[in-house]
Image (cartoon, rainbow, N blue to C red; front, side, top):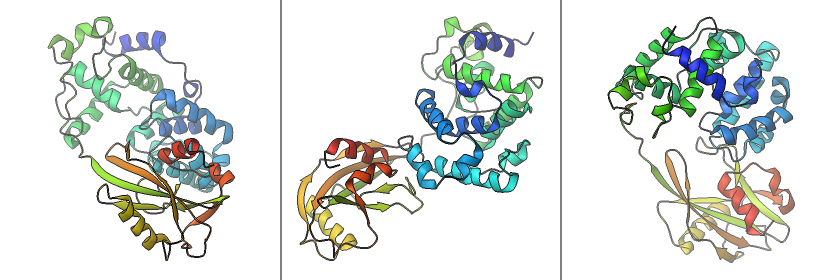
Length: 351
């Protein structure tokens, strides 16, 4: 009997969540689920997984869609580079492999947006290849059970955990093993206040025996949070509104938004409007300010976005820069926008 994996298998049989990607060995659906679940809770990701499978049943369907369609379907999920990479990779697989997902680990790892963890998950679950997954849940489980105090965010620590995970994997059924240890970490060996009294590993767990559950795993330090200040200008006529596509290598790349002026701090509205006139029109005289919303906060993993909406009405469009896109108000819901803009559009009453 393996005192580490066997209790986890038994626990997994009775406690695993009923999830659609666990009922298939289709590499496309497993890949899709893994990309969606990066930085996303299962409860939220499930809705998006179902939506993508319904709209794009195969890799070929996803490849033949437009990036705007993919981003719109992804809207609200965040970390939009995942969606762009998903679409790019589908087209790559369609072109290079005729729509057939590659079946060897190195080819999977070579796909854009796929790292070691995701490649291991796909290779083991879809193709029964013995590659161990090491995600946050597995880091935590291994660190506590084996008493590993190397920082999980250090290169030395990551190497040590990956080596151990590779030694532990059940080579006869790697897909089941990987899913079991991930689920155990997600539901049983949780980050804060795990239910150790009802854990099947409790009598052989280093952290429990040595009262170090709260201290493990170890991290070197937190990433500094960057503050940014976004002034959004909702420029509209009686039946239209103006948008701009984000094309820079920044958050929300290729999503649409209202014309934006980013400032160093919470500038007064008059100052922001002056900058808007410089960037987006030749004169501000044509603009009539309707309302200015107060500052709100939108949190990202490493950024804190302070934002507000300044509504501007005009009857004269001649001075507006050609970088803006004129959109019928009734069509604005067809454009993929960041979550904070989606909330405004749905609640503003303008559309």
